[in-house]
Length: 371
Image (cartoon, rainbow, N blue to C red; front, side, top):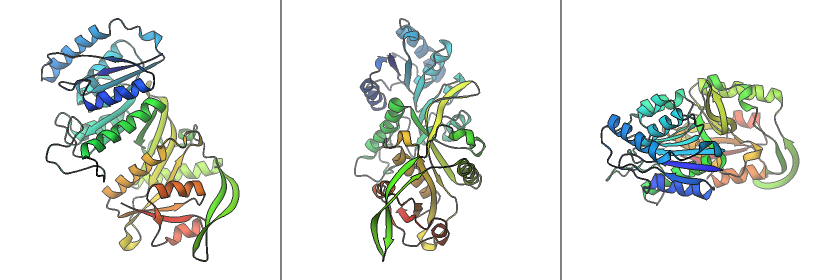
């Protein structure tokens, strides 16, 4: 059996967008839904927390948690602190979606989960939330310019995505897509630190790719040719991969990864097995092209086709743009399936080929993607 409990915020009830739609998602995936109603909460955090917690105890007192093999807490604002405190007191092991958590939430030993935060949240400073999530290796999804409701303030034309859709709907759509992956498949995303990149990190990763057809450039034209082979990594390849990814992070680049399920860090559960990753190197090259090198992107064979690669690619694009790049450069595997992915992401043939990449992988397709 599965149960999802919704913990609202002060004035942010369960019929407001983040909780309404995440509750709908949980119901779609066969979770029993329980909504905790708060009434007459103070605007002051200490008093509001005490009152909300007392109301939560009353609301949930008849639930037998032992009958559920999957417990999901979805919380907002003060509700994130209440959810963390309730799980701690009742020894409940659960997964969590923390919408706009408060700094006080992290004083209550929150369990594994994903967190969402806006950089204009007046209740929580971004650097504090970033630090707290990093210490717990909790995936944190930040929306620039968003407030405590994860919306853009009235009159703010800033948008996290280039879309004709109203900006706040774009934010909600992105949050729900990430929430759905977490609810349905236990997938969450975060940047890696250099000290955690090791061979053991890849124990659940399956590189295997059965290649049948590849793109080849012949007489200045691209054609598809039969070239069957199995692409996989040896133990030596993994050793090289670990060394390269560590170097990427240590030199100021990005390694952003997708995890599935539970792991344990300092006796506390957190999102566990690495199943995909993308890396972007820090240095600009290519002259006026303003390239940043997307040096790798891979999804474990068992989780391909679930949109994980798209999330990673967009994260790489966002990071590269913030670092001043004009385009991503990708020396990409020539397999037909791989090239179809890059085309769907908006990649085209690179205007300027990088000699180093061409020399290293002469059969790769040299691509670029405008930022």
